[in-house]
Amino acid sequence: PPPANAPGPPPPPVHRGRSPRPGAPVRPWQEEAMRDPDATRFIPRTAGVPLAAPSRWPTADPDVLRPYDALATQVMPRIKDAPLARPTEAPQQPKDEGPSVAKASGRMAIASLISRITGFLWKVLLVAAIGSGIATDSFNVANTMPNIIFELLLGGVLTSVVVPLLVRSQDDPDHGQAYAQRLLTTGVTVLFIGTVIAVVAAPAFTSLYIDSSGEASAGLTTAFAYLLLPEIFFYGVFALVSAMLNAKHVFGPTAWAPVINNLVVIFTILVVWLMPGSIDTDHPSITDPKVLTLGLGVTGGIAAQALMLIPPLLRSGFRPRWRWGLDSRMKEFGGLALWVVGYVAVSQVGLTITTRVLTKGTSGGVTAYNYAWLLFQLPYGVLGVSLLTAIMPRMSRAAADGDTKKLVSDLSYASRISTVTLVPISAVMTIVGTSMGVALFAMGKGPIANAERMGQALAITAFALLPYALVMLQMRVFYAMKDARTPTLIMIVMTVVKVPLLFLCPVLLNAENIVLGVMMVNALTYVIGAMLGQVWLWVTLGNLRSKRVIGVILFTVVASVLGVGAAWVVGLIVPSSLSPVPHAWIKLILQGIVGIAVSFGVLMALKVEELKPVTSRFTRLIKRG
Image (tube, rainbow, N blue to C red; front, side, top):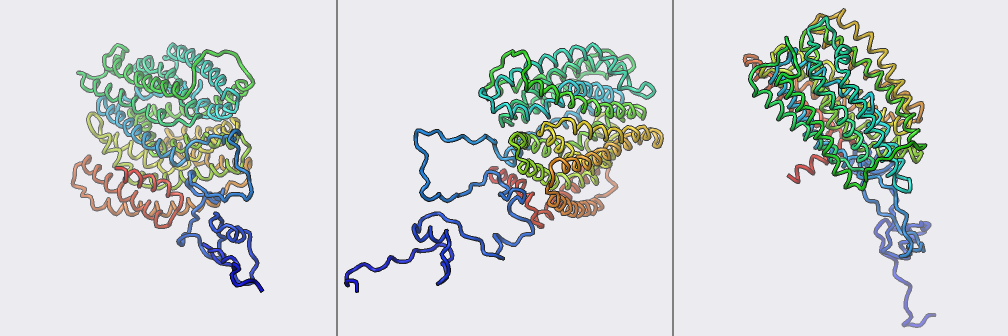
């Protein structure tokens, strides 16, 4: 027998989890706890016991089984007897994936919101300053030309192909410095030559977009075009530098630069408003003081927007240098660029025919279309563009690494976030569209009839907001995989469907309602494009986790219908005896607040997990305030 003073057996370890049952086999995690009670260990989940409070929706992204917060910290147990890294050994640096999508897009959404509000403000002020008739139509057509030509030159390429290629070039020994320098040299050269040619050919562009049988003024449009077409160069510089910054996960300056542009344009329009007289639409001239001031001021705003990005680019470590010549990657860029130019060219065929059809109607049709489209894109510009800009480098990295699972995960996540944020807004826009048009555009020189048409055009096309966002997302996925051919083919199908329907609008509708028919055709085209893109991605990538996306869509539609119903009921209590503008403002505010609150309230009650990044972001902002 052991001596009386001999130590007894060691006391059993204190378990912080469930203790093993007597006679039960000892599990590996229990062995670790018995050897070292302070060791970090995993507690197995008990079958049938939920992880959290009962919820219809999982607390983790089912695509990759990770929390929705991409920056969540995971505590990993130390591997027994694994040696620590030696001080002299440089640990392998993980690939920089930048900030989380939710955080990066949230920051940009604030800047985009201010940008869109100020951008919309100067459009409203323009109608108040010069009306919504021939003068505004001429300005809008001329102001569209730089965007169209820029997209044909490099715009579509810079916003789609360049970011994936820049991300891939960061694996070079010089971290992509030489490739970015070649890209900048080629881009600036092409933009400068294209801008000079476009300014010289201004009258030809006017004849392309203006139908002389309508009420539009070709002379005034040409005068504005001479002043506005130099924007092409500055649009290109802005897009090129933005792509270089985004590839480095620098998003802030590119999101805030348009605000500077809008402030410059607002100041310009206020000056034009205070100037005596009106724009002479009968004898248009580039020397007309209001035409000259408006054209130079708007172009100056785009120039300020582009130049604002130069200091952040230099701070990011990039050193500009003229570097000529083509390497294998630039040749790859050229091949992808040709398909993107084809995509843009096909899309501009549809836009050109759209403009010609609109100019066949009554004056103000082009303005109603442009402003309704501007309002339509407002929520997408604040939420959708921010999300795409933040997620594009991640998708590009996943595609470069051949990680199809992660690529599909990002696609599914972006689709669900777009659904829960955009569908309720589009539903409310349908019911408040007419009130919004009257409230915003029936002031100054803007007649109420034209303002109502703008609102009606918005209400008709609002249902296509989510399909439009999905089409833009799907195109980014194809470009991340260096597939520029498929988006072009999809756009061809969309245009083939769109053009015949556009030509039917003047035949089936009277002159005042042509713009409504055009907006409907435009919306249906994006519905077809979203369906076609989804099928094509399914064929290319396989399982897209669509069941989860469809579930989110169904729940969001139900919540949005309830929100629209509540907004409609609230609209009934607004007295019709009020004058049109106050009546429109009261309905817009009441129906907008109630519709949005009910829609998102129902989504929160249903515990739709995809809404959590949005609600948590706003909660943090409120707490900071």
